[in-house]
Image (cartoon, rainbow, N blue to C red; front, side, top):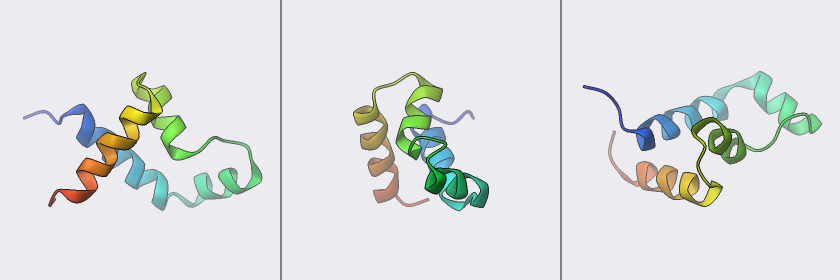
Length: 61
């Protein structure tokens, strides 16, 4: 069974939160925030990405 786009957005967000090289680049100002990267990847508005991730955070894994 394939995953929904919302679930994939959440998993990508969680992976970015754990990635130390990404965190370093974010502090240096070389990359945008995680919501912006996910929005670009999935070609969706940031608001939609944020809502999808917040919905996945509330649901049990």
